[in-house]
Amino acid sequence: RKLGVPVRVPLSQLVFDRSDVSQYLPHLRSKGEKIPDLLAIWAKERYGDFATPLLEKGSKILLILDGLDEIGDDAEFCLLWLHCWIRQHPTSTVVVTTRPLTMAAPKLRKYM
Image (cartoon, rainbow, N blue to C red):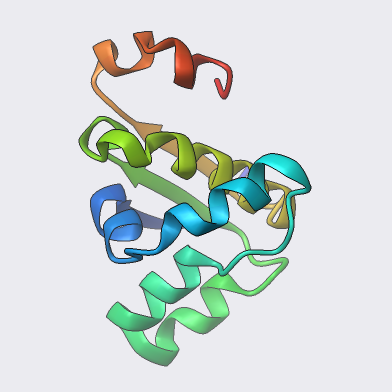
């Protein structure tokens, strides 16, 4: 099975570039309402129009989200956002990297 074009995203850039992410947390928790596609915004800011075909629905990418342990309190938001993103991009594969001790946090365990 082909995994698609690899796209590595440092989570610290994806989350911290969006300083207003906490306002979306209640929407993600309740109804999974549509929130801004943080990945598309991040990619467009860095790669311009070149990123558009990679992130269209139905495109297949290997999304590598690097550094869950480096985003502190934004980790829960990130995992909730990722859950929604995966539902909207079922043909993509996602890998999340973190240091082992981070996943011991009970608050995050429910997303694994």
